[in-house]
Image (cartoon, rainbow, N blue to C red; front, side):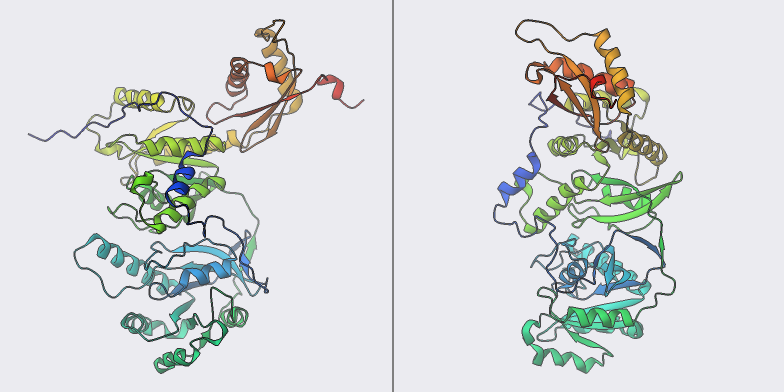
Length: 511
């Protein structure tokens, strides 16, 4: 007799009320690592040469440049130097970068698609999960090297180690597209020992300091000289729908990201915390362009012990400032976690669209509509103020439910970017005030004068009233509900602000 699978635990948390007023999760991470603030802000790196840096422009036919080398030689630091911002996580811990981190960048004024790969590890503890991950990292790095137009081999000035020799041996078939950067030679330091690498017969060898910027400008010029830009064309920029895939570790975020982009950009394994950097990818669906941001899994602060994971969590949280919609991944078998609630609150505070994605739905024994309805009810209990958010069951591994999810995202993006004309908005407001007049009393008398939409994506409305301090929360909720139901914002957060004004809307019109 087959063993029954455990039912999902969608149990109600102890606290009844959901608090959206504070940035709970980021505060917890700061408390857990109060001294680790070096990568908290993605500030631009100072550089006298402004001819290279990241670009928002879109191109086709870009040459592919891949940064490779053993762990901890400064690959991610060099990537960030070219980007002029901290995009790849940098930490003394070897093997920080796992998934390739890629972006379009201007090097010596020329657009290039730059990729930072994971470090090539020679020594691996056979049979451990870390060894499996190391193998996946090396495999993915070699795949990128094969596709590259130019490979930047980063070496560290000092004694030659076995991993350097093995990496150089692996790159022999790609010798014609190799350029070598010997890092950590700031101010001429270690140059004498850096020349030891000449024994391998490199065609080009440059002494640089990725951290301090030494010789980066001539190195950039050397890179550009090795590339062909004849097929590069700038294309008109169509703003994509930016999706952030978030959730606790091991819920299938990377599997969904790879499924959407039809790639293997994100490494997938059963090891919790595989993804560290935010992995970006693009795809088209139903005539729309999408950008997907695969983030690191967010765990409780008590389980975060490494600085690297702390940085990963911060990057994941900062992704909320870049995205339009959050796919909050929930394991349909294990059920909800406290971290799901906190991620949701952060997205809600920023006015992002939120879709609850019940992954691994194919593992449910009972997939009837009744079970789906019960699951929705449990989620609505835990997320009391999020009843407007869609809940989509799917299987990222099998690919079922993906089209429904993307159709929901397109509809939600339409609501996020919808702007209501001020005249039409105030006609609707007059109708709402007529149907349900503001409560009148001697102590709390007020009048709602007019309203305007302050912004779209996030959707914010500004209400003007004679005495905003006495407008009850219940009446504000009434207006918010009317906006959501009558004006087509029924699936997204709607933010409100109220200000004082004694002038009617009609009186403010130009004569």
